Length: 132
Image 1 (cartoon, rainbow, N blue to C red):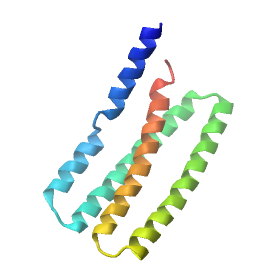
Image 2 (image 1 turned 90 degrees about the vertical axis):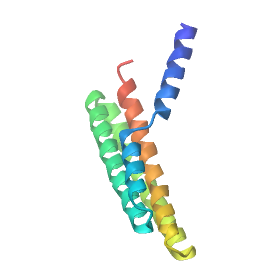
Image 3 (image 1 turned 60 degrees about the horizontal axis):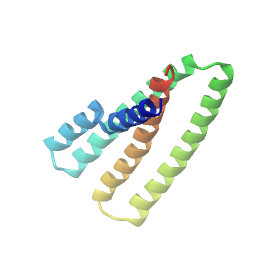
């Protein structure tokens, strides 16, 4: 049993490092044009894709949970959204008001992308591991 648990942990560790189609699409988009505007647009598009992925796994997980679990999921998601909104305000303040230059717009959008992607991957993991 202990070996099985170790193999399972290894499997999910490797799985979580696999590149997603969203990451592949982002890389292709970024490779088309070096301009700051294109980099920012590509990153915003990836944010939107990760947000759709997040919502897909949120809904799938919600359907699998009992009523009390749904309540906890909803509360956790609301708290995460509050964190996300606050963090986005800080990122905007820092990279648009404190830092100057268009490259910081790309950096700020990438920071936001990472926040959304991380939550999407968390919900995906919960959803996919639900029946194990």
